[in-house]
Image (tube, rainbow, N blue to C red; front, side):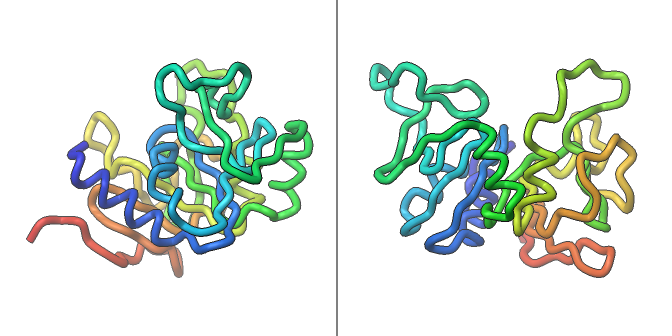
Length: 195
C-alpha cells in the first residue's frame, strides 16, 4: 500500500478518537495507529493481555523483559499504566469499557457483519479476542485494504467467510476512503482517491 494513503487512513482513524477514550488496537494496520493517538490527551490503549495504558514499541535496546503487546511484541507503558490478569481485561471488554476497537478484517458486510478470522480451507489457531472486542466495544472501526490479494472486494453486501460477529462494524477505512455503515449500506464520508 502507498505510504501516503496509509498515513491518510491512520490520520482519519485517529480523528475519531477523542480525549479520555479507552481504545483497543487490533493486529496489522490498527497497531500502527499507536503513533497517531499518543498526542491525544488522556487516551488509554487497552490490551487483552492485561494492560491499560499500553505505549508504542520501545527503541532498540530499551525493551523491558515481559512487557509485550497481545501479539507478543515488545511494548512500552504510558504514565498511569495499570496491569491486571487477562480475565479482568476481558471483563472490561464485556462490560463495555472500551470506547473504540480498531480491527482488521478479511471482509465487512454492508449490514455491519465482520469476518476477520478464517479463510475457508485455511488452517488457523483461532480468532483470539476479536469476537469479544467486536461485541463488547461501544464502536468498531475496521482498517483494511479495499481488496484482497486477488483483487476481490473486501466490502460486500454479505460476507462469504465465516463471521467473527454480526452487525457490529460502524466505520470502515480503506485506501479508497472513509465509510460509515448505515441503513445496510456503505456511505462514503471522505474519498481518498486522487482527483
